[in-house]
Length: 337
Image (cartoon, rainbow, N blue to C red; front, side, top):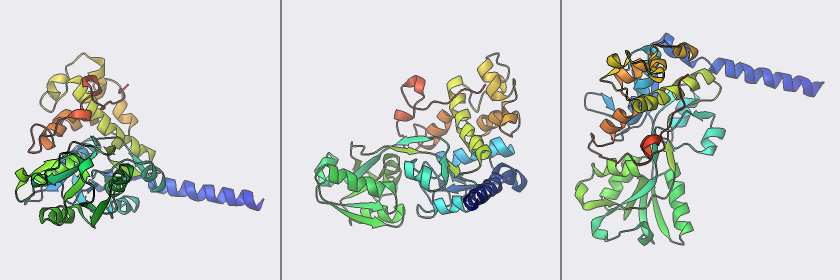
């Protein structure tokens, strides 16, 4: 009996914890602003300008959630978080969603009390070196010193790669990516390693960007995406379907420029996504026009990619794996119906 009571008590505690945490959508609506965990400053993903205006692919992910929930993409408070502090901030409720170029891994998904809601950028880890080093492959970096941010999957991947290829490495770690980049630029390391997207972004900040190259090897899978807390399925659905709405909009040809015209469409898929037909927004606890507001105010996935990291940005990163599934990439969203 004692054990039965203990199980009942534990179940009650877990239910209470889940019930207490399953309030994020209401909290955001009542507060009137979304608290978004952001990068401390990574071009293309999350970076404030001198006036405090944030831009980036992760930034736009949060702006899209705000558009869906609050009807206004500008109602976001961006909270800059280091790699070390990002998970604690989400777990403690300091932020409602974490959108900070964070890799989806099994341990983070199961042991940290997080749920990843999807992949907004398929990335992979690479290396940046000086051209003067006359190295054309990461396999030529035996006994090299490599600057890396500590406490990241990047640090773990670096050790795995050199061990797997029977090479030696001198790892030089730093608390932040910014410190690691500055150390590399000052000559403390032969190479700098992080996600390939980050290499292109950080290269722009070096004293002479043209003197450095990104090596061709990609040594890991880095699916980056937004995360929310365990125990709040409704909020998990809202953030997940926000990303899906952006991907579906691109596939259906709906852009920030043509939403009003597309409202006249007779396509069932378009009508369901834009709220002209069905009650799919209400099923999420949102308004009928949730997806319309996302696309109209922020854009579809392709528009967001292009202006932040793609051809329309200084980074000019190829879509690659981030193309739609119908164009040879991995971006795929379930249908709204």
